[in-house]
Length: 222
Image (cartoon, rainbow, N blue to C red; front, top):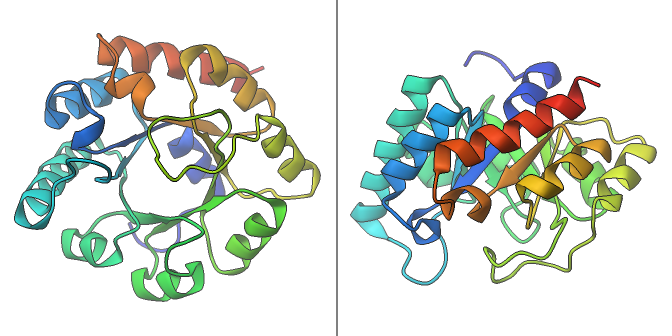
């Protein structure tokens, strides 16, 4: 990518956002990502955390393989938290939480790559925008089992609250989002949904992605 990504393009990428590491998958992560990309995932975040997470060379090797799948599909490959890994892999971007390195510092280090920042309040969102975020990951919308350190669920209302406060940066809702819940997250003002277990634990990964994406697109087009 050359130059900072435009908000309109970012909104397109956020429609169907898959977040995943090996610990989230009921089958091999390569298989899950391959099927998910075939189903229409629009952006992918590599998040290798939790019990049994890979480290060292194993982590780097998996990240490299997953990045190649994304490149072949023309889908941005984002790394969770780890700026060094993102730069070493020549990833398309980094996503950071409120407890990680500051957005201001990460922006300086990654240049024009995509910067996503988790935001739990309007104040978080304003600070992220000030420091150069390209999009906000807002949540957890619903209770989630995928993150041991997740904050309390706020419901879709937190997205609506941000939009009403004048936050117009692209937003992806995250946290406990299922096929059934995806529509109300978009109606609240999100540009897309980020999912983990709704896809990684699905019996038919490709079909799960297709159904969620279809609901998202239907709401966005009305």
